[in-house]
Length: 536
Figure 1 (cartoon, helix red, strand yellow):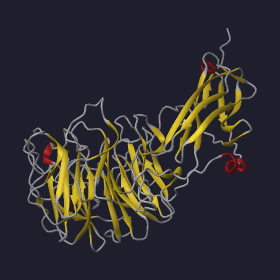
Figure 2 (cartoon, rainbow, N blue to C red):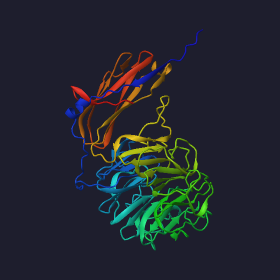
Figure 3 (cartoon, rainbow, N blue to C red):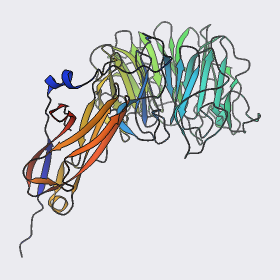
Figure 4 (cartoon, helix red, strand yellow):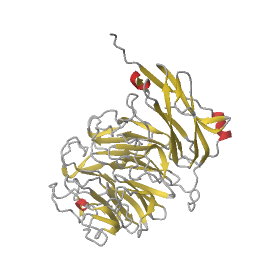
């Protein structure tokens, strides 16, 4: 009896673009401005990220996100996750953004604070808690809080700095992250859902909030105008910079000054470590705990109760100099230098250092980025950098497509592995207010004989619309020999696609023969032609 060999079929999606029809068939793609927005508003772009989502502030003051959305942290009114950037609803004139594990915070130019996503610990600041099944899907204003000049977000708590130099916190208080005891009306011993002032702390000019969990609480950092650094919360990993790293059950509610450290210009907080930039462009770090990833960047895997200088990997090693901005996350850090280069150190198991490897780095190592960069951000295990041309580059973990692009392999399109090399988020630019829609066709590209001969194959088209509302949209799957549509309907009517959202549809196709088959998806604006086509 002869054994039948398993046959394979490969599906290849072709690229067809009819540029001549773009201008004649498509309305202007300038982003629609929400009522009440300041005409011509501009701000400095920035990036932030949580565990599975990425947040970017564009120069026009709008907020865009992508990745996981199980808690509504993208702010576009649903819990639908996506690889394409979507715009936060009814929000403009934003000057700063921050991201917790699964919530997002925005500061507007009028000094008000807005938040959305998970509110399990009161981290949205609305005075209430929500269950996992009832997150906030769109931005809401944090009540009783105004005149704010900076915001920061830990995993489950939020921090705001007022113009008068006072610090206000809310959310989870495990480890004392809020800087006060929370046996107050409306709160519990572990949570406070409404902003309260951190007493005894004034003259602050910058804030940072560390990552944490219920089992490994976070910490909070404040930088005073006199260049001193003050910390509170968990000190399990010596991340407070004073005392010991012996874990105790008693939270550190009171802020304390990091001794023998001054002339600091900016700060960042990770899970087990804290980072500070001096006014001379050098970097200090402390903490490190017991993870041994080299979070301190001093060439060792040791923890340190006191600040140590971060070194680079030049030969011979030198202190990092020329630092402009620092960012920190779980067990790694990024620094942006004055020459526009980005350097990183610490944990690298998910490629979050962007140096083309998955090896930890005990000293600062240059990422594989070329050109001049102007802003950086970190998620739990992925990183973001904004280039001077407005493009956004990401790398690291990508299982929720938080990088803004797919990294899956043809044999397993359901899984997006990490990327240890930076890549740009296609079709997105922080400087542009005119962005065309993008159309993507996805499906398993290589099929075994047992797969394609027995069951229909699903092909999904996703239309992302960052501009004005598209009306009367229809998507057509252009077919050819060797395969057929199961439902017989090549054209799917989508209808209207509002700006800052996406739409998708699925075709079921059946293949009749092995080989290579080319498929094209078209976005029809009218019966006479299509204006934009993109392949997988």
